[in-house]
Length: 471
Image 1 (tube, rainbow, N blue to C red):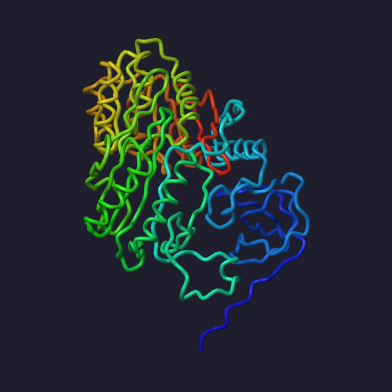
Image 2 (cartoon, rainbow, N blue to C red):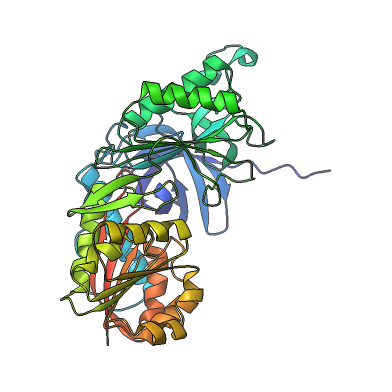
């Protein structure tokens, strides 16, 4: 006989006391820390425990006894379901306060190194419609909201096709998005038109569990130059249906400057290894910064908040303290944005990046901007940035590094320590892994400046720029 699962308690009148990681908040019940989503400090709730461990628990609010005076109304109709923008119920100044605290906590608790005063986090001028890229998923298994479940309709007759975002923790369930506040409203118009067209024509939405169907993904990229890229990803190769849809999109939205499509029949959604086909216009768009034009292809990485990226890069350049005589290594260079941005104040810049297509864009960006003092290499960072590479190309005066969320590989850190640049500018989207790496660099470097930058309003994410100087 199987053991009956122990029923988890409902606890009344619990006060929310702080903000935690991943957009959750914290309460304490008899010294047990409980992590709760969609609440803010000052809320008092009746709390249903959903998961219990020895040292912590997770829960969800089932009733609000009193609301925090700091709470504001969520502006998005999908709040609390799609999993994004969890902090929109906090006023923006409060969001910045907690992001500042997050950076300080990570650097002190994980890094355990000597720190200067951390500068106040630089907020984003735009807090809505600030992203330049969104990715949507087609699914034939729409996530039904409580309102839909309570409607009493005939679910067998309900259209279960959705175009939107994955439900957190459920790979085969997608929330149908009506309006998203993250990207220019043209993104909503395009997405809703495509969904409606596919519904009317009976196009099969992707079955994420059994892998089948015509429509798989949709990617929309915008830029400050006004250019617009739309990438439609199909699964089945239904040529006539593809052509009809692409023509309808092009006719409805003549402002699209790059209309592209992909046929992806592999197990995952990534497109880095897929052939991208052009239906209309160019196979790229341009972004502009300080008179420099950056080519952004369908596979290129570019900071998703374009306007705040400019402020981020200015901080990185200021921290680098360039006078025109320096050899600079730009690690994880992407499309060479930082490399080309600092090249005019450097003797030479060498950029390294894993994605070959991004490196091709980086080289094009240098050529297109008449920058002739850059070199770019494609490959795994730990395999390229070796002692032999440094001996061949010269010891850098400055290293700028902007790694992915996982931070830098130990081999990369060892190569940086061998190179012994005078300064390291470390740009990070994850202060926790940044703190870990700073502790490894501490044997030769001291942290002399720390500047958090908010690239993602209404989320818990925060970028952080650190200047390290050789001891």
